[in-house]
Length: 193
Picture 1 (cartoon, helix red, strand yellow):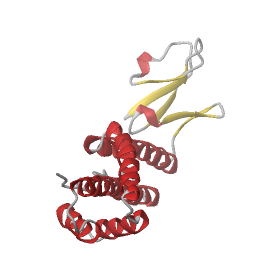
Picture 2 (cartoon, helix red, strand yellow):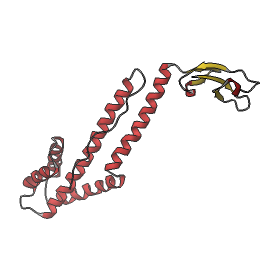
Picture 3 (cartoon, helix red, strand yellow):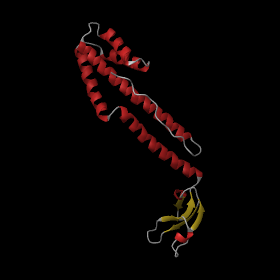
Picture 4 (cartoon, helix red, strand yellow):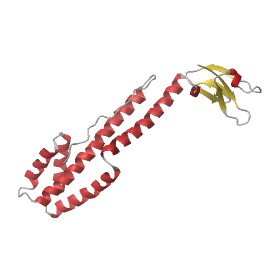
């Protein structure tokens, strides 16, 4: 598309007209061939078209900003900010109760980490913890083990989304031409009771 770019003498702002007749009569305009009027810039007093590298850098920054917002929205869609904060409290309460009952919280944390990282489903993981740390089937211990385990699964979801985000960022940063790919998060939220 052709545009006629000029500096508005009253506002000193770069303007683009789509027709030469739209340029004020007392102004010198530069005729440019562009994809979009956004491609026109004022560079040290010179009106010019952005280079391919400038367009790519701008598109990359925009894509990174949008991806950051997408990642946050994706996480919050499944795991609200309020729930994340209440999980911190639940985890502290659970670990306090478990320690009060004389169980080794460090060992429990390690086992939970192993279970979550090995993609064990929630119920199997909870059964494993109960067999090891709750042989008498105490309902309170089972409840608090369940709470700590749920927190771990939800926090692991965030970790996986962040990994996915980092992978997408690398792909954007490595891009050498436009258009940039569009990314959608695919990490599933864990199935929890």
